[in-house]
Amino acid sequence: MTVLSLADAPFDRWLEAARDRRSRRSFDGTPLPAEALTALAEAAERWRPAEATRIVLIEQASEALFKGIVGGYGRITGAPSALAMIGASEGADAQVATGYAGEAVILEATALGIGTCWVGGMFDSAAVARHVELGAGERVLAISPLGTPLEKVSTTERLVYGMKKPKPRKPVAEIAPGAEAGGWPSWARPGVEAARIAPSAHNRQPWRFRADGGEVVVAFDGPEARIVSKRLDCGIAMLHFELAVRKAGASGTWQVLSHRSDVARFTLGSA
Image 1 (tube, rainbow, N blue to C red):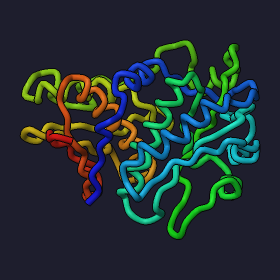
Image 2: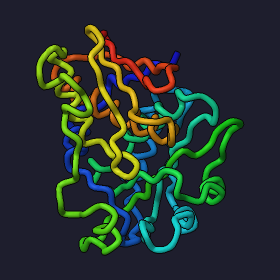
Image 3: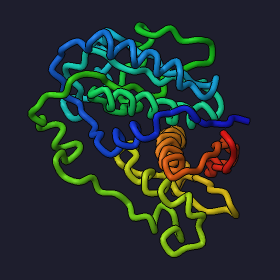
């Protein structure tokens, strides 16, 4: 059983970063300061909540990492560094834990003033493997460029993200039925609001929360297509949820579930 918790996380710092963060794909190519790289490497090591996953800093990232993106649409340019989100190739726990741990490091990067962007699937796995030594049974589930974003938003970014416009977010009533009408634990409502702003593949926001007694369960919506991506996205939303719950004065842990669509259960506790 995989239990996830980041009890010593700087939740105020990361919640502010979560609200400010925007995915960026165009960077100025300037190498990141040594102190920023050291801080990110330490964050990746410190906030590793499960053995099934690890986040690796690639200090000098080649353009080849991002050549898996077809044509000019969505391409990444000028990123001097990157993060590799690595998980065990077998087992759903690693997918969830990788999203959870990866978002922790990305929010720390944001707090340091570094631009980021979750990239899942559309990257050159072989190129990443030349930068990162993978262990038996490991694979790269996602990457993120790291760098100083261009001041001027590129045409590509405007097309992909609709930059400078509010991101469309599903209402609480859709992602957490009943949360607004009462019947949910009061400590859980801030968590749902924070989960709404979590990034996800193509902004699908596949997470669905439900109250189950005094606990909260997160599941993914719809058919099982893209199940790996959906579980990773839910892991990202789980971290947002936990940060807001902790800021509200509660604490607890996530237990990753083996059910096909139920992803994890949050239980209050001393963690």
